[in-house]
Image (cartoon, rainbow, N blue to C red; front, side):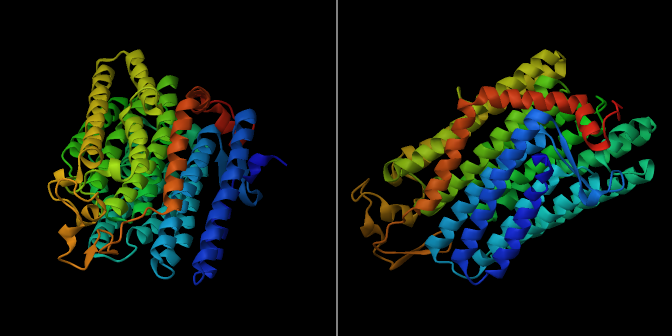
Length: 542
């Protein structure tokens, strides 16, 4: 049996784990074990599938034995398999982080009981989207992950989370409606929704119809990917969610939208009609996002704006329509999933240790928690693109692809990419200087929890400053006693450390990873391997 045919288990296993976790809803410890075990097995399976696909090429699985275009097909190629492995590794790290937080806070009932099955359903939706071989199954994948994300975003039921959740739901519904309309129109025009079949039949439509369908898909996926000007919802939605939820959202959800854009531009519409438009969108996304980050005084909101900005780099590579540009984009997507998630996990630890994520209320964390300082510094410099980290290598590949393109607009994007990278370094360094380097007493409005754990006598501030109140309320709604120092749970620290180490491994093994990205880019631009894997040998190049 071809191991590649087991790829649908990447969707089935999380669903099965979610069902078991739901049955164990009154047994949180068993829930955590089932969830972690399910994702561990899923990750091992996906690594195996990636190894097979790397050697043998794309593998298509016809569910129920129905051949396309009548049946549902799932396709594992190098790109989708690589994303499956990285997304599951990141999801496993975040799940361990969330489990550590739940165990430390004693949340033996309530939201954490709902969290585990919902989280596994989210992972199943992401995997389904990556493996989908037809537009409707891609839509189903989006709806699965979005439905789960609605629940996760509003855990705890606070006013701010409900308000942010409403905005998120409305925007997501609009995006899904546009996608569904596009699917209906594509089916009406071609009689199929299978991606490989569409790769052949869409080219036979008249240019006006092609452009309309192309634009509909780009707008629907652009909202999900949070490209400018369709990114207004993200900075107000993500920061309000619980720390583990924000981390997995930042790492994965927008990348599913980017994945769909890449498939659209390489498989369905491999023309350059909208390349200039995408280049302008990439430039504005990079610059508007990072300028928004510069203006923020809260770490979570700042990271949310940098998330938007760096989506622009990915769109830049796609719009170049070259092997080097697409390879750099694939490499950068993998890098960004890991680094952005780790930074949000670190921010959750900062919030737990210092009592807040507001920059003006923090200081002295490098002395109070050296391990936390290291965990922030490494991915922050990686995101900023400092050599020799993977962020630098990915950006360098994109800039080289832009220079190779040689058009005036491509050169503008090269300059814009450098400017956005320098501004990213600025905001990362500002957080380091103010949150970690300066003393707690130098903060403009120091958080009481931070002062409670600061060394006695530092800047004339000590525990005596808090003796006017019996308890101190933290930003997460928890309470610390007068003499209680916030302690970082080991499982939260170890899971964050593991993800930071994965980011470093991407820098160490950047050569093989970029080779894999380049092979994936060549296959996607050629299209023939994907089409023949689904429709059979001899389907030919459309």
